[in-house]
Each structure stands twice: as C-alpha cells, then as structure tokens.
Length: 139
Image (cartoon, rainbow, N blue to C red):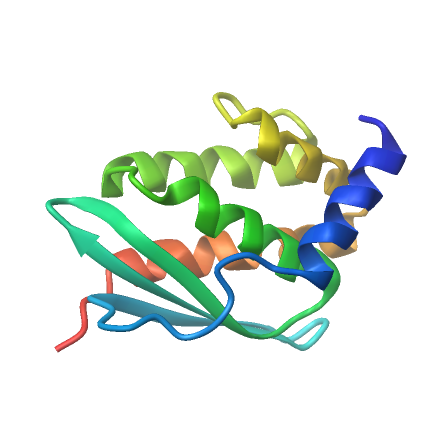
C-alpha cells in the first residue's frame, strides 16, 4: 500500500466527508463510541425493500474514523442488508491485517491502518455502528 495515497485519501475524506449530517426520515439508526480516542459517531439509514437506500453519519471523530465513515456511507448505498453485513466483516478483517476478501478497491486504501494497531478501532467503529444500525429499526 502506497503510504502517500493512504494519507491523501484520508485527508480528502476527513476534511470534506461525504454523506455527513442528518438523514431525513431514517428507518434505522445507531450510535458508536471509541473511548480510547473519543470518537463519537451516529449512523442513520433508510432501508427500503431490504436494501440501503440512504446512509448518513454525524458526530465528532478523528480523521481516520471520519474518512472511514465517509467512504462507508457511499459504498453501502444500494446493497442489501446481508451484503452490508458481509462487507462490514470483510472490512474489519482488512483493517486488522491488511487483507480483506471482496473489499472494493476504493476501500482497500484504508487497509493501511493495520500498520497502526492503536488506530484499527478508529477505522472499524463506523462499520460496527452501521451493523448495529441495521439491527436497530426506529419507531
């Protein structure tokens, strides 16, 4: 993994995150917290016909967590809930050891975080919160 590419993508997504802010009419939502670095993130979803129609996040988090959430919310739109859970598990493996099966190329850049074990939780927190949201219908 090219370390400069890793840093450039992280900076781009952390400074101008995609899908950041409140989601109108969410059907599912969850909050996540990383006590080690203070990341607090909320993920809101609109699930329609068993697939993610819309995904947004909000909160206050470090650059790695923000970039991961930004990339994640764009990647899961249109996926079925089961496909999202599979992708989240594969991403977790990528973040921990740098080798995640079937992780889209756009997300592979975050695999560089495995070189910094103390930051793996930062990259994985949005994905764990996403899976919690899938299991947390509103209303």
